[in-house]
Image: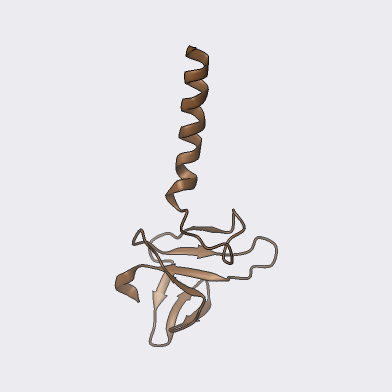
Amino acid sequence: MLIRFIILCAIIINALPALAHEFYEIACCSGEDCKPLPDGAVKITKKGYVWDGELFEYGSKKIKPSPDGKYHGCKYTFTDYRPCLYVPPQSF
């Protein structure tokens, strides 16, 4: 019985990080492509948001609201394509 409890606890603990960012849209992320960005990684300009040298223009469908109030970027591993940028509500 104790072993079952330990296994159950391990499963729950491993699932928690995945639940933290379940807001990533399937079109933006294939499970590994989106992640929180460090402070200062996104610059706000007159034309839009700049992340890693790429401009995400205001009004673009690539810009998504970030429910946790932090920036998150999605970048495909093999092509460097950036399908989405999640921005905090105060930045919208």
